[in-house]
Image 1 (cartoon, rainbow, N blue to C red):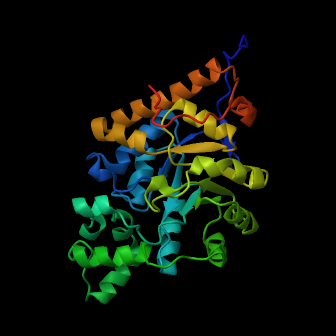
Image 2: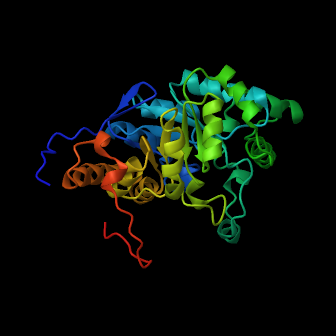
Image 3: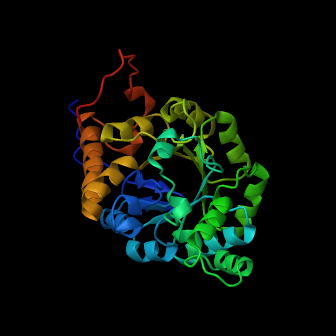
Length: 331
């Protein structure tokens, strides 16, 4: 207490670029199911308030559309790694040409998990052409599809093209650490691996020459009962934080959550569901208001905790309390 925190320093530097805050928009696919403005609306909202936008491969807008909407805003590209190398190269070339500066490679979704809720609701958008805009607009994918269907386009044979694209990005088999060398030859910017949950994998990422990792359990969508990402963040950050940029994803809801993740070793955090909830209710403006709320909460909570900025977020200002369960924030 009694510390001057009126000039809080909340900016961070990631991969040589300065950002206004340590909060990034997480990659979220199929945004057309939330609002008709799709990814272009959310990308513009993020650009307007200085939040970097991470575009999902499972988007319902094209790479070029999102880049145009984002304008001068910071944008990263998340890759669901296609099984065909020529398609991967094409996607990365398009992303680079469209001003995406960082490649985020998701490791844990080479196969979709067993998701009973999705099955109960019949939620299979990709098989109906929804969320396939990145693939359907790709010249290499389109050429291969035409060659296999006597000149047909994905728009003419949506079901068949959808099945083909899903097989590309969810092939049912994982890439390997050795394969990362391919990405280095195709992408000349920073590469971040998303889905790291174990110290051993974090060390392998360092050994592979990666620039960053995202400690993430995919928001609990891939493995039921997976360890909470915040539980493993401290040990991962302690092991490799001095050698690689550590980011955090899965569960950020409030400004206090951001502070906790930073204190436990993350350099920045990804926020997904809260922004999408706002987007669903009010489109780009709704998402903007939610993200502004998280940003404001973060800055206010820093000040009230007597912390002058991001660099003051250290483990010693936290205390772990074993509660009785069921306790929730009133925020």
